[in-house]
Image 1 (cartoon, rainbow, N blue to C red):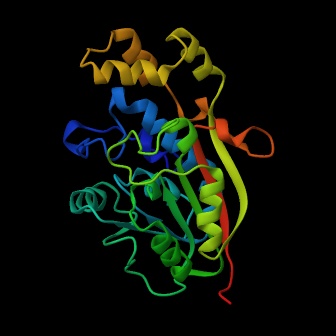
Image 2 (cartoon, rainbow, N blue to C red):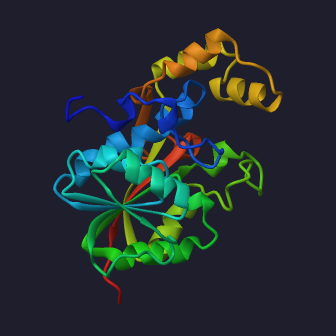
Image 3 (tube, one colour):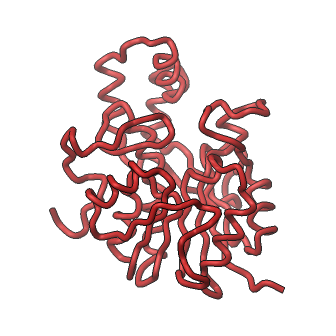
Length: 266
């Protein structure tokens, strides 16, 4: 394996998989590949920003994202609440440092990292403002918080309660901006994750929505056809597009990706 190979492309044996519970996505499972690649694209997008920096991934899950960021970062530290995930990450990705801990009480000293990455996690937390305050505390002056989350408008359309039972509160772009701003950050960019050309072709092929085709079969307990499995398994991270809110309607995005800089406390 070359040093430049994404962690997600490593060959995984069955015994190396972290159990798929529905709360997190993991690499190496064909039927999970759409969601995995949709998460992976954000890591690939921001990876150059962490070059030579001390990075914290808060809510690291399986660990594939932290390992990807470690290709260029000076150091990568992970914090996750789940003991099984922490043990798995330690075994699978020895290039990162892993702590088991609560995200609203991060086991790091003040001003100890240059960048905090928090992808597809904030929607799981009960105390979202408390977590953002902790990110501010552990960042050095001028440090960066990078946060992604499902766009409430398209993920749970028209609903007050999230569709995903593991989510506590989902956000739209304005709500995410308010959360970060009130926590002491300046949002420098609000980006959206969208389907690229190949995924739009697959949407058309599967009745207008590849997402719905997967979810409907899962909810109905129907076995996937070999064709659907092949289409989903063949998706790559660059089949998704990340676009600035200035260039496309952010409210139509699948996921939000906020780039924010730590402001001094007054």
